[in-house]
Image 1: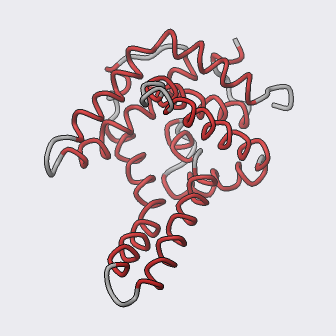
Image 2: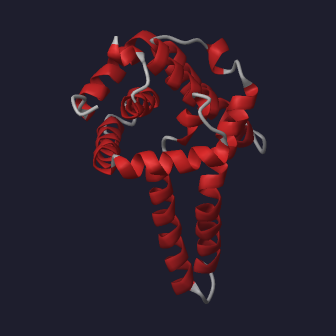
Image 3: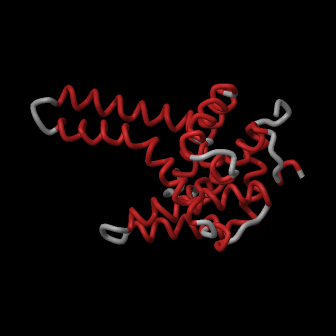
Amino acid sequence: MSAISISQLWSRAWDLFKVNWLLLVGLLVLAIIVSLIPFIGALIVGILVLPALVRAGYLVARQGQSSFGEAFGDISLLLKVFVYYLILALIPAILIGVGFILLGGDSAGTGSILVVVGYLLLFILSLFGWAGPYVILSGRAGIFNAIEQSFSLTAQNFGKVFVAFLSYIGLAILGAIPCGLGLLVVGPMAYVFWPLLYLALTGEESVSHA
């Protein structure tokens, strides 16, 4: 892993994205369209479509190619990924939601603190919990053990993971400049980059080493 740089991983993600752009962009566009359905759209996206996008990125990173059928091929895995993200986001979401409610009343100061703490906690949990879905998809652990393994992996490689987060934020900002159209590339490509980083940190085989 020491010989692999973040820039190299982004380069590999770009190469894999070019081969699988229809699948990755298609799933992202599908998520956007389905989310427009009143009431149930966001639920369908959270439970099935986004986990399928995560799985597609993982399979692309590991195999070099994937398909819509493979992305949606194991509903139980998709549900586990959904529950994983739900657990990580639950407490921050509660803090942020209560904070915004309080902002409209006499406890605006408390509301502001809750919102800030909620977003800060969400960032920390995202930073340390990013690898959990790939632990689940690889079959190495269940939901709660995946949280533990992700936190441990990040703590052991904090510098490289933090640089990866900063690089993603930078690319996302650049992608948003041309009327947001660049995000249709940066967004799907990131779904390949993160499992590439996971596979590199854990030493598992992937197409990135072919």
